[in-house]
Length: 142
Image 1 (cartoon, rainbow, N blue to C red):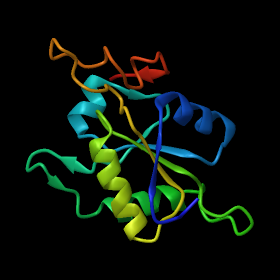
Image 2 (cartoon, rainbow, N blue to C red):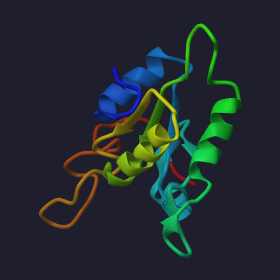
Image 3 (tube, one colour):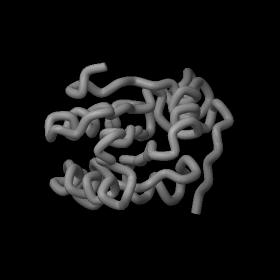
Image 4 (cartoon, helix red, strand yellow):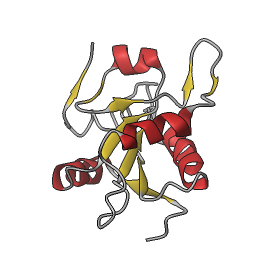
């Protein structure tokens, strides 16, 4: 597995990786409002990629992710870097954020390809054709 690419995981595969590797960290890259009011996976750490009020890329994103990793889950000499799993609404922002991490030299980066809510269905609803919630994985909201 190359360290310079972001690897896609289904929601179920992401949950399995989190269950099987206690060092793995799930980072929710959605906005504050999405994280708080739409809900988020149980145990997810929130580091927004793009956020209100200006909706621009967070210039401190990579640094903030490094701070999460330095909190104890990364860079054990014999084990390498902890797996980082990114999740957003539908898998697009998490892929962009993952590319920023790999470009900064952070390896073992994954993203949830269906996101938390999945794509929009024929009735313009989310969470009905894919995503973390659709698959019944653990989530909560404030």
